[in-house]
Image (cartoon, rainbow, N blue to C red; front, side):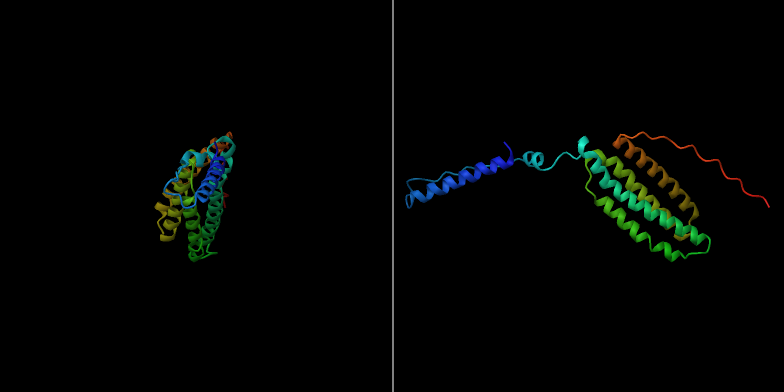
Length: 189
């Protein structure tokens, strides 16, 4: 019996009880009222109100909720990378980079707060670790710590790769590695 049907039956029962009570008038002492307690279990509510987010028909939309944060973060990280290159060329200021970090932190916090079904815990773990590593690399860059920057960039790439593989697995996609491009030759003078 569904929750809706239980509530309809309960409503009919309550109307019937109210009718009987009103018919008895002041004879409540001789005709005691009986109460029926109807309870719904949590599984009844969950099964009728919320579909399983890990079911195959729901998985893609659940993955997209997590992936939207990653896409937004990657866009912000790309902007930060462009600013860092501009700083290196003397075209931009470090203050331009520090303005992007709060936005990236906001995205990371929203991603952390995103409710996650059990089947997507690994995806979210890789995502959050990637985000922290990118933010750590930016902080190292701002403080002039080249070694810390390089280490965090390497770790961020590893987590991003793990995220991409897990994303593909969840969506049933095949990952085909791209052969690295041949290094460009440095022109001689």
